[in-house]
Length: 198
Image (cartoon, rainbow, N blue to C red; front, side, top):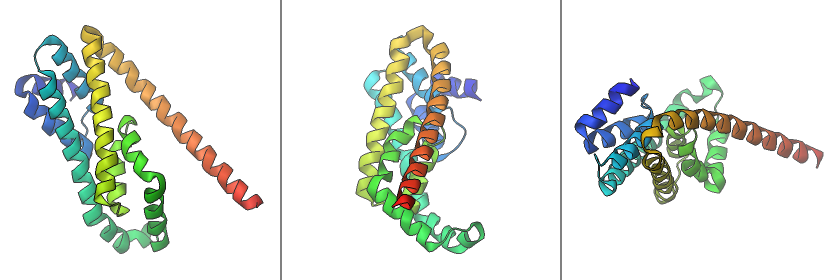
């Protein structure tokens, strides 16, 4: 699958980058980091021009996360109201999720790009939580710029070594994700214990 995607990028250029990144962010099994790093490598080789490659990557990721947000906003709450009771999701859960996104959850749209698996869910969650469109745009598109810049730069500066290093970075991202989840869980437990003590 990964090899086919790299071949499509080489063959169809910027249009393939836009389409594949859009589908990957929506949730299809596209190796997004590999795609971006390979695109940076092709800029290094002179196959792509940097401004156009950056614009294509940004367009693909921006379109993908916007589609996810709109799907969550359009269908998410309806599905929760209709089927939520079967999985024990109540109205107060939705209210709390909305309050959390207002307070701090929007940062997950920015940081979530760098966490494997999370970037595919944050926009759906933001839409389902009824996060306002301007806030969504600010944090989601800022995250897209940072994410695209980081992995395009990685591919460009690594040059011919991009593939070996990119694989190692993917493993490191998984470990960092697990560490982050453990840290957040610990913080949540600490807050609960502290609240009970009071």
